[in-house]
Amino acid sequence: MFISIFFSTMFCTTIKPFIVLWVGNDYILSNITVFLFTSVLFSQCISTTIKSLISATGKFKETKRIVVLASLSNLILSIILVRKYQIAGVLFATAISEIFITMPLNAKYIYNNVLNVSQLSYYLKLLYSIMSTIILIILNKIIIKVFSITFANYINWALSAIILSIIDLIIIFTTMYILFKPFKNLIARFRRLKRW
Image (cartoon, rainbow, N blue to C red; front, side, top):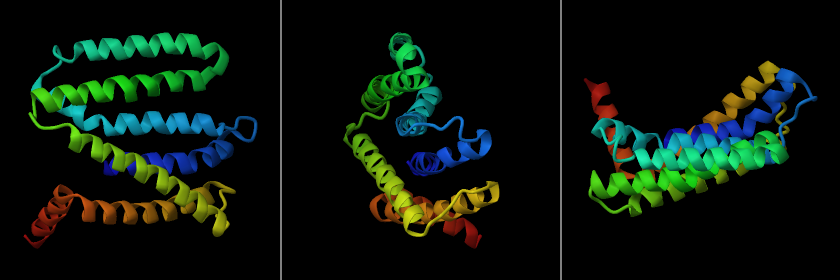
């Protein structure tokens, strides 16, 4: 969760000015393309834990159908959408197959057949991650506007990204520490290791 929220937020906030610095104003990403890129990044990050569990338990054969279904849906949607919407169409197809096929079906299998617990905790954490990412992106945009943060050159971009990342890290860390006991226990373990 921590990684998916942080990287998705920072990517969505800083990618457009970076592209402008890199290739100039000739190629500016639309807001919908940035949103789709962010959605794909978020879904890939958030599903890493489930995919790691599949690898660790060797459940490749059992989840093979999910991979095939997601790949086929991604391919079909990409072919349909790419002509009209170009890269945005491909990103949309990838996001749809990941968010509505790979993530829920893999989570259902792992929670029902490996962990043997309710999927409710997974979807609550997913909801928290989505809401946190949206709120932080909005907050970053407000900070950029209110404090007139600019991305005029690479140094400016890097400094602005560092400032925003520090703010985001503090907020994510604080909320997760308050809301999630496993995260709080993890921090406590690190503190005990430091004392040694």
